[in-house]
Length: 139
Image (tube, rainbow, N blue to C red; front, side, top):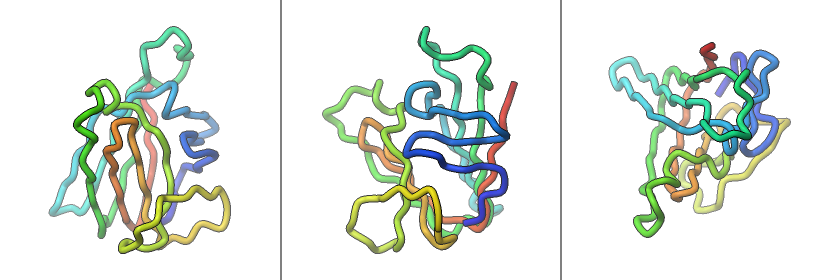
């Protein structure tokens, strides 16, 4: 996958247009939209409301995936509270769609064929493979 305007700097940290986004502490996962015919996936995140969250951060951002060729959504752990559904636990990569290994994180030497994994505190997981990923910041 080609990253057009973003860079992962940690397992929960994303750099977009020189803005550091902490997806675990400062943003809540809000929703996703999958357009099957266009082969596009959009993940929508909103700035959290905690008193530790910097109010100058963008109010929302989206991760847009184009030419999606792989999408898998793993279920949440039903024993965990629903409040854990919007909190990212970790971002990582899978080197192979058929792997049974845990996702791993790497900041450099990223293979464009690797799948992206978003695992939430509820243990739900979104795994995506696409040709292009692009982020959009809202004010």
